[in-house]
Image (cartoon, rainbow, N blue to C red; front, side):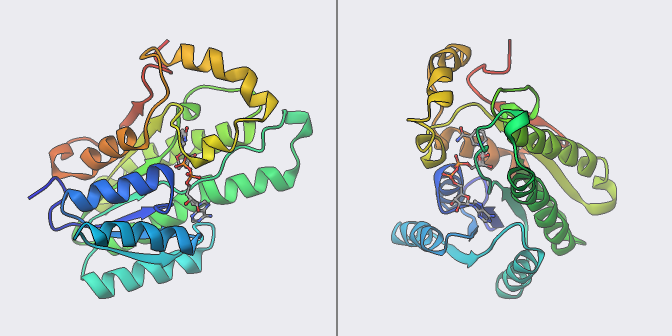
Length: 253
Ligand code: NAD
């Protein structure tokens, strides 16, 4: 039973925050979860938590910006479980918190390598593994994937790129057999966000930002996991190329 019963599903960045909540929920919904994270300890602890609940998970140390890491993980997953049915390409890093004139090429390149190229590389190898059997992919964008924000040009550009990549791949479904959608969260309280508190540029934005989440609060990782889970499930069988905001109304105005 469960929305993802019997499915083999990858979660990148599954060691922490939204990815960890997703890995737990997907396992509860019946999936064999594969946690791909460059933080081996975090991935191992997520898997331990899922296994302690009597559910199925395994970890692969993977840097999503390294094609060989992804190719190895996907190959091993298919060899071990016989198939790949779904993937939540969630791994990502926070913005450098600089204005455009202060942003270094190294900040920019690191952001693109992980938050945009990382999603592309994952999709490429996941889709190859899904060839013939079909599958579903959910990419992690952000509200910043459809609107701008200050001190975040590197992040905003990468997340807009994920939107474009998602839409383009969704135009190829009759060739690939893979549905591709994106989730666009508002501000979600995770370790990534907690690390920003204390930064004056960020602190100054907190009050107006809560205000813009018209539900009146920031989000929880589990609330994003729910959206990703449904998009990966067969219940979303005609949803393709969708940009699902999970943002309490942040981008609605
Ligand atoms: P987090 O820092 O709590 O978790 C991110 C995880 O990704 C970590 O386990 C980290 O080790 C892993 N990771 C980072 N770089 C990696 C790489 N190169 N290869 C493999 N794993 C890597 O962050 P989070 O807040 O849960 O964010 C997850 C995703 O959600 C990110 O893509 C982020 O941009 C996006 N997002 C977050 C928010 C928010 O408010 N928290 C809002 C919108 C979008």
